[in-house]
Length: 385
Image 1: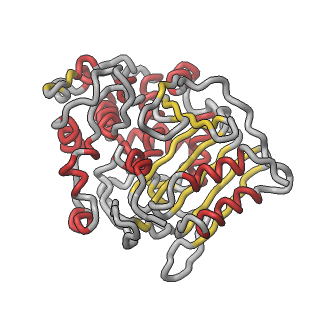
Image 2: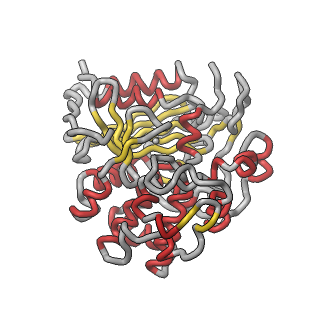
């Protein structure tokens, strides 16, 4: 079994047909979530994941399941309260924050980048006067993803990762790395997943409010929802509190690569696009509120869930503003977001009304997206026997 980091992970880490009517996902029967537990066990036994957890929220309450370990050296088991890096699931937080500010009339989705960051996005085929905040959030801006810059990407592969893992980047530095590469297309010309979009969105948040992205995140989302296990670490390299070891192949393309402990690192390179640390419980609470319309006013909720077709991304998906819809193999559509970073993959998906949620995380980055497809199918497609 190859353990090189799959292309799908790179699309999430360096950055996932307009969806039709949402199908009602069948709730698990009173016998529990045995199918999900089997999928977790298979993720470890068949896919080689070091450990995996899942939390289900539905009309009956909460259920937590796990398989494998948090630490392969000690055999410590996974726990419900563990914190982990959530990667690009951060984008849902950033988009929700922007939409909250739009509701406060601090900014508009129709504002151009130039209005707030004049002259920053200019030259080399770019015109910030033609790129709106909306196009940043739904990845139709055409702006190059700084994470795909050849020289920048090379700093995070193999031995180079150890040399650079404590490096600190400013948002402006990373945006300029992205802009040094030509655009994928002109604004509105397609879909291209790009972390640069979400850095620019957060920089606009700071200009519009006069406060930091982290301060506004706490004011408008973390504190109101009581997300006490969630925080933006900035340059803080260690994960606070109880957490699993984050195991990574460091993008090795070897057929049987060595596995490393990538838990400790400075994620300023991910910031508003992928830097948040959270828990299964907090993610379930956040996405449940977001999907259920309990976080955003109706007008902003409609904007968030206005979907565009994706290209060269996760199959069967459409993308809104920081959220995506994914059609499962059984035809059921689920909604939420996902993320991949060194040593951690996360999926948080549920029904469109937010009443039935599944949050799952693997503390390794080589198992593939199939393990999450199996978990989602077990909960949303298959009736428990």
